[in-house]
Length: 72
Length: 458
Image (cartoon, rainbow over all chains, first blue to last red; front, side, top):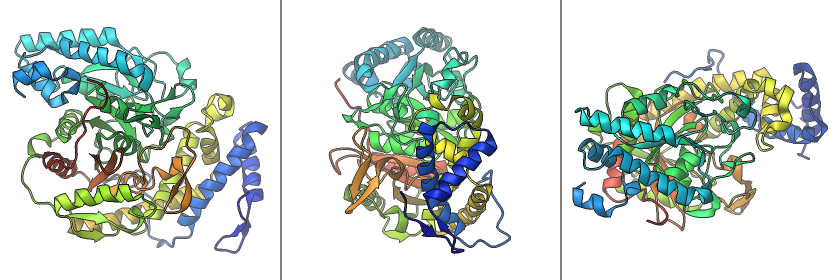
């Protein structure tokens, strides 16, 4: 189990949050998630969210535009 | 190379440039070169597991065609150079596995991928396809369906990934030139761990048509070879723009700096020593920082999971059980990632690219380790670095991910002798400046700092 942590807004997140997102998201997207796969998906989501926090925590100016196709 | 040397050096030890020159000069035939490489593959590949499919009938016909072209006075740039490609590139007549079980249900490809087609048109001889992590989502080439590719320097260790077959084949002398793809480090990590040269070009510089995608925002294709000159000629043939190969030996002074901060955090002493050796040889005594590289790595991580998960959504719905267990959880989790995260990562990308462009106002090239450590043992889950236990698989891409995130061209140069296994250093240039990175790699090779000798028995 990962340690629950507070994000910038003070919301406490834990594996319970990740499991809830996995269940709701899989239902929403029509993915019949096998019971045997659920735990590893929750763990993977927690790992990705730990990285996502580094992005969500970073203040960007309103004018910062997305670069979905990077043009060097 | 003199004709005398050709009688004493096995053909599988020659560079692509030497092969092309001697075949074009009719000192050896493309067919002789091919048969020597086939013998080498038969001798070594059962243990190394680089190749997943061979196309030897086609290769023999192609070699004969090259010899016939030369007899009529043609002089193709890659005359008789055996080439093999990661199995996500279409090769006419072979199934494009992309490392998966699922895509094996598809019919064989009817055309070559564009990058391969350009090599073949220039006289290269296609041998077959090479092992990889499933759907290119990994850094170790421990593929559940096809088995692991073994590192020619130590078969108990990983070749790196996801283009592990491509790097190991070049290191072992099974082919002088291979193609791979790099989304987060999949050319640079295996090139480093197998001790060969690899080029991840500028995003968009080489054609991806006919290669199975992973992450549209980040996918690059590029070559592996045993010299910078070979990378340059392969790049020129596939790129089709102003050639870089003729200029790599020019004595242009370059302003080179070592990347500090994130790019030394968590590295083994050997990885840092490899960078120091390269820096000293280039007279690069400046250190500089690429700000927020850790967040850049995080952003690439999130975009990769989300785009990869979305690409495979239908297959995850219907055939989740047929995915590699190493790949499935991350793709499933990525498909469920809230859009705000991906959008924010893409917004951060533009910010980070602007920071990088500022560095290139003062420097022509930047140096960083390719990996934090040498090749891990196959199956190894964690490792100790500076007293900290870290997971092996994601850790291998720490220093490559921030760079591909913004599409900068990189040549990985192999450094031997800093430990029992080779390591690689990233020579990073400004967008569109492959020639700078290749020229620096060539200089390091000329000065004896970097080399990629064939590994294994003669």
